[in-house]
Length: 305
Image 1 (cartoon, rainbow, N blue to C red):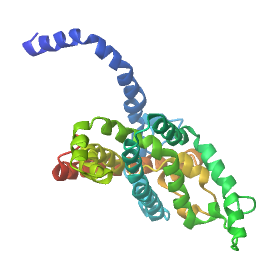
Image 2 (cartoon, rainbow, N blue to C red):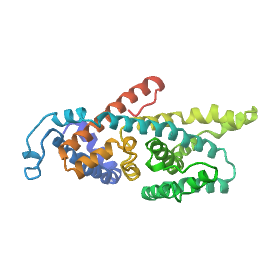
Image 3 (cartoon, rainbow, N blue to C red):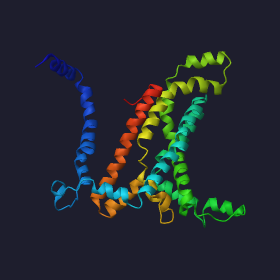
Image 4 (cartoon, helix red, strand yellow):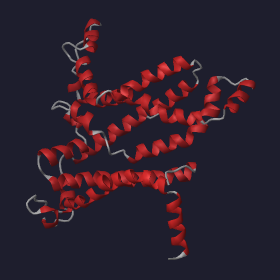
């Protein structure tokens, strides 16, 4: 055994308890993330269940070409990227602003109460959220439309209007997740040296100036990392909520790659074709993540790796 191998064995023995704690996480990723990658090859095959994955014939990039030439391709790309960018533009700054404002609260009891109210929507089921939207926005009995009628307007079928879909999807997502997303930034703000704020107060700085010149620069690395992660998943629009809000009237605006994969793969039983679409989605996310990570490393000296 070489010296480096003996050093490695010695290190494993000294830290064996930490590695044992790490084993469940490693096992999870191996079993549920890496082993299923074996099935990705059906995207390049004409998969038939009786033949199995190994016995199905290879077709190369046929399914990818079919997807690129298909009628809904550009609609899917436009809706997926548009909904994701809209969600980031509206939803990304809100948790930062909430964290900065919460950090300025002095009353501990009031601060805890506000945090509890902000975090609570995160634990509401997506099905319940969509049910609330359906109830409040109903053109007949919905509270919003009742107000519109009282003000002299005509009822609006919000969930059946393609132009309203993205706005409702994004704003309901912000309401549900902004408070929970602020936790990361509150944790980063907790590490800011209080002496900086005390010195700024002595110099006559206002709360807004302290936020701008102390808090924001301090949490900027965290902001960059979160932004990178969101940009890296720009093609991954949540399936459950999108599918629940989807109907035949708003399909032009609500059909995204994840719902299309579900319909063609599980409902239409086109397993190879849907696997190719899903693999294309993942490949785009991977390329975007690597690209924005390099740009962030060059521009801000902060990156994921």
